[in-house]
Structure formats: C-alpha cells, structure tokens
Image (cartoon, rainbow, N blue to C red; front, side, top):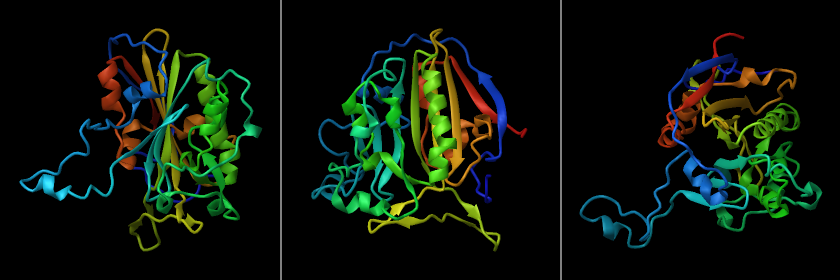
Length: 298
C-alpha cells in the first residue's frame, strides 16, 4: 500500500496512465557508445572547464579561488554508468546507464560481486557497509547489477556504495525490482534505453498543516534515506522516435501487484522536485519526442 501525504511538485503520486503530446521530425542519432557517450544524455549539462575550475565573477574572482573552491559537481564515469555524487547524502544525485540487447547478454555472476566503499570519494563523504548493517534498509542499486551482464567488471562497478541508497527491503525486492525488470524488457525491443535513476527528498504535510522535508539517516556517516526514488527511461526506437517514461515510487512498502503505470508522473514534476533537467537536453538531440505521462485517473 502507498502511505503518507507526500507532495511531488506538479503531480500527485496516486496516478493513472496517459499519453503526452508528440513533437515532430527527428534528426538521426547513432548508437554504439560506451560510458563516455552517455554524456550526451545526462540530465544536466556539465561545464567541463579545460583550464581548471571556473572563476567566480567580479573583480576579485581569480583571487577568491586562490586556495581552490570547496566543491564542484562530482562526476564519476564507470564501465557501466555515469554518476553524479552528492557528498551530503553519501549517495548519488543521479546515475545514468544505457541498456540494449547486448548489455543484457553475458555470463557475469552477481554472486562474485561484493558491495564496497567508493575510494574515489573522500572518507568524510562516503558510505560504508557498516552504515547499512542492522539499519533495516537494503543497499538498493541505482544502476541495477542485472542491467550489465555483458561484463563482470561492469556488473562489479554497480556495487560501489556511491551507486547505492538505503531502500526499504519490501520495495527493493518487489515493486522496484518489477520496474527494473520492465526497463530491461523495453531494452530488448528498442535500439537503446537510457535509464536515469536517483533519490528524491520530498516535502510532507505534518499535523500542524505545515510542509517539512524530513528523512532518516543511518550509520555513523549519516547516510540519507530518500523519501522516494525516480527512474526516467529514454527509449530510442528503431524508427528514430524518442519516447520518454518517468516514474516515482515512495521508499516504503508498495504492493507489487499495483500496475507500474500507476507510478508514471509527468517529467516536469521530477525536474522540479530533483533540481535536474531532462527535456532540454533531449531536445538538443531530437525534436521527435513522445512523452508517456500520468493522467488524473486512478
């Protein structure tokens, strides 16, 4: 069952399925890219300065950066995905991966993989296995291990704790698992499926009638427990059409028999809630976009 009065900007979480408007005529776009090629599908456009960090504006900008800037967007490019890390939550802001028939084939063995700390993250800002031990939460993959059977290294990369967030076991093992399986089924019938997954921390109305953002933290490193998770699917059709499907699930027990269509939301609601942008970047690649969005029917 779904619980609580969580508010997703621009949409309700108790949603039916509907069709969004289709735009027209697409420019051709080749596949066959690796993790670096995912940069064209990132939910934000990273500013990759060739000559060091950007300088603050103003007459004293250069001098202000004399001892460096305390933080910039933390991108990680792995064998199987690209990730933007959030040191405050000890997890990712988003993870993007590319699925197709080739990535789903292979002899990779999940049993040979172990969850591990991400050594590329400063020790102050990273999660450990001890944080999850006895917490009551699963180490929920953002980029799913089963999406990358094509390479043992690619599958192992999904076990970095930077690609993990605390997830309610019932959700992780049932409804969320169904959504991951559905994503893979779409990859078998499309040229490519780009999957962007991340946590949400949504406001909730409390008894006093006011809105609050509250979430639990676990372990000595205070790993943040998301209130919800999103998954955005960008489907590249063999015809050249691009189809967009976006989902949100609460981080709570969810009846696995609820149709996945009930969790479809307008992409705009995820963009508003997450601080990310998807559609502008997609429209840089194509103007033949079809959005599968949520309606108001149950």
